[in-house]
Image 1 (cartoon, protein in one colour):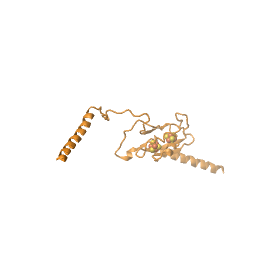
Image 2 (image 1 turned 135 degrees about the vertical axis):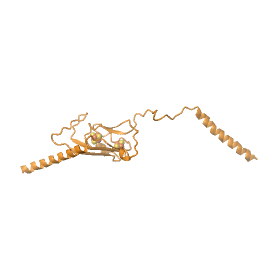
Image 3 (image 1 turned 90 degrees about the vertical axis):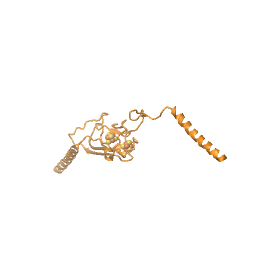
Image 4 (image 1 turned 45 degrees about the horizontal axis):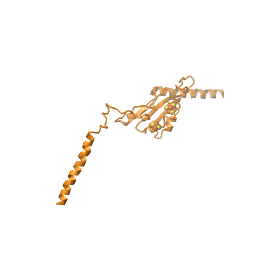
Length: 173
Ligand code: SF4
Ligand code: SF4
C-alpha cells in the first residue's frame, strides 16, 4: 500500500517538475531567429568564402604553398618581351600570366593561412557563407580571368620565344 502511494507521489512530482520547466520557458524571450529573413550580425573576425582579385595577383604561389590542405591550384606562364602585364595596386610588377587559379571550397578548412603571405593582399575572406551545392565540382571556383584559348596562346608564344632565342644562340656560334 505504501509503495502504491509512493508511486503516485513520484508520478505527480515528476509531471510537476516537467510542467514547471515548461511554464518557466513560456516567459523567457525566444533565442531562435527567423533565418533567413532575420540574420545575426557576424563577428568581426569571421572566416567565410575566399575571393581573389586577379588584377592584383602576381602568381607567386605563396598562398598555395601556405595552404595545409592543398586546395589552391595555380598555373602560370612566363611573359615574353613585349608583354605588358602592368602593375598591381601596391606597385608590384607583374611578370607571369596566371592561367589557372582554382580554389576547391569542398576541401578548404577556412583557416585563412593563405591570406597572410600574399604580397599584394589580393586573396581575402568575404562575408559570403551561404554557398552550399549538391554537386561537389561546383565548389571548385575558377578565378583566372584568362580563357583556355588565351592560355594556349600564351604557351605557344613562350615556346616560340624560347625557340627563337635558341636559334639566335646557335646562329652566333
Ligand atoms: S583558408 Fe586555409 S584551407 Fe582554405 S584555401 Fe586558405 S589556406 Fe587553404
Ligand atoms: S599569394 Fe597572392 S599574389 Fe601570390 S599567387 Fe596567391 S593570391 Fe596571387
